[in-house]
Image 1 (cartoon, helix red, strand yellow):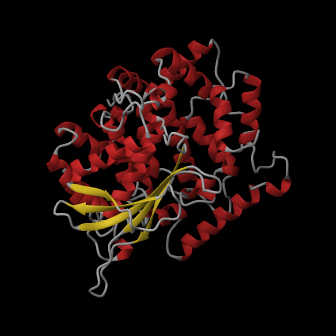
Image 2: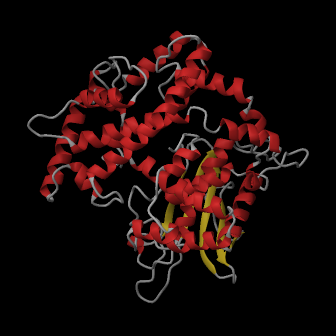
Image 3: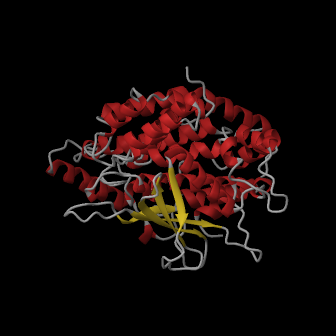
Length: 463
């Protein structure tokens, strides 16, 4: 078995052989390290060099450390603000995580190690909620989901999405849609390419083909593309999605609306451009919440044979299972966020702290699990060493707080309330990077965000 994430996740979640899970965990946790099979792939020196060069680069442009440098273009205002945010969220999530771990250990009849958690969480969900992904899939044909999603966007933002058959595409499965205002005026367009096929990049994402702009009196409308890797249609032309797939589609479409609904004509700050890294996920994570509404899923579902929408009782089971393990998952993400941020904020050139020592110190503060000494998580932590999340991994939770707090305004007024939706469109989706994002958020919400809505959404006591 190879060390790709789908294989690793499947083994951790479904393999009954505990020794196999531990063996797979050890292989995963020692990738690209001094304990790996090939010394040429050991990232120990790369980590030291990257941290040193980042610190030097930050100093060259007048910042005390790389964390300060990173925050210069983010919504969070200071190192203390980020650390306080992460530590408060951890403190308020801990009791829920302890209860979850206790329930899993009671079910397992033993103390659990890191390689046991996913397996026993899956067993817990099956025992407590009896929800089956395969049963859910039967109600989510891809075409029905897309139609329901477009109807939701039309209802929220008073737009129309129309497929255009005369636009050239690169594959028979790709499609092109225009988006029009209430008066029929085209304000942008986007391609979709949602099915997996050989040679196609994995994952799901959106990006821009063209940014909205008007630099010389010749306005250009935004165009984007939305790509997923859902199961390709069968011989009957049917592609059935899991509910996770539905959430993914809603997430990416939230990004697409951010790109398309902008009213800013400077390409560097229109749509998704110029938006702080810790806020750019707000529109996408916000849209995910609608995929947990029965009123929405009822319009996005239809059994291929009966045409019946998702049964309410099946949705209720799905909703009840939503927060299983949420406290443990919260602490895991906060552990990673604190490790990343403190690693960059506390770096000292003369006496750099070992990344492993920093990780262990954070785990002593945050984690409920004892990790083995061989764990080399930093050596394959590509988000912060090979991606764009250096001193910014906290952004995932920061944006989740924004999204949950924003959605709570819809819940309070009714999730289809036109005045709330119009205000979200005008103050968040239309402004791109042209306005300070906190001021834009306050203009929408009437106040700064709080973490209470996220805790409530995750079934964690908010007091």
